Length: 347
Image 1 (tube, rainbow, N blue to C red):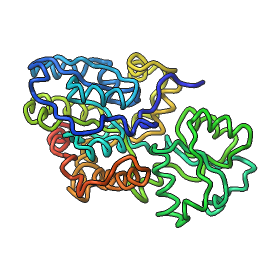
Image 2: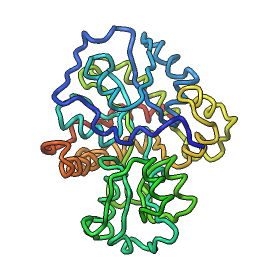
Image 3: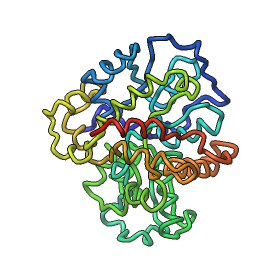
Image 4: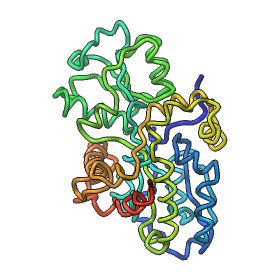
């Protein structure tokens, strides 16, 4: 069954308005805050559903308007109109935004895309190893995280010139249709298209593997830097809830069922089939606060995983003519301070 939710990373990486966006404190009420979320799955959404965030933030004098957006482009427009100080974006989207001058910072990794994006070879295509991709037709949505990881895998891991592979720009539904007709030999994509083509295909690699060997792709929470500096109590309470919600979740998610409270909460917030939500959860990875603050993700300055991901994403976006030039450094747009403080509150 095709789920009604969708992963935020798909083709929404360039949703932010061109030009610098500054969010002044006058744009936001002292007590009411709009937080933009999208149709993602995980402990962040379940903590919204069960009221954990609301309870913690109310103690600090904040009332949150949890506003669902259908795409990163919609959240970006809300940022530009000075309506939203905190929101959800994918790693390539954050790269595009900061490169264009948006004064935001990444403060939490919502999920490592992991196995939820994969390169699948169609049965009968003759593709058994990565080297067999040469001369073959591979479908992928251009300027997406799948496209990004496909190019990285070809050039940096397998040392195959991307030009030697027939890489075709296709939307997920087009991939499924072309796959069924036998018009393509392989595809790099996400569910539900991934789920469909896996029925008659073999996995060559996935974004968990590619991410470990190069840089990961992820969904994250970003905040306007000036607003965060003026609202430290909100940021502390918000990340404290995140830390507690993420603690042990990766180990616990395999035991969740369609009837689990967490699953029911996610369905309440974003819709979809409970069974599909359970399946999606187990394709993603959810780093806890200690992982968040480490150099694997937010810590370490230039050596942080997030900064490296932004740097590599910027080169990718430039190659796709989506930005004029990468920034000299993406370190100013990543902070581990909130995760570091929150990690101390988790037992």
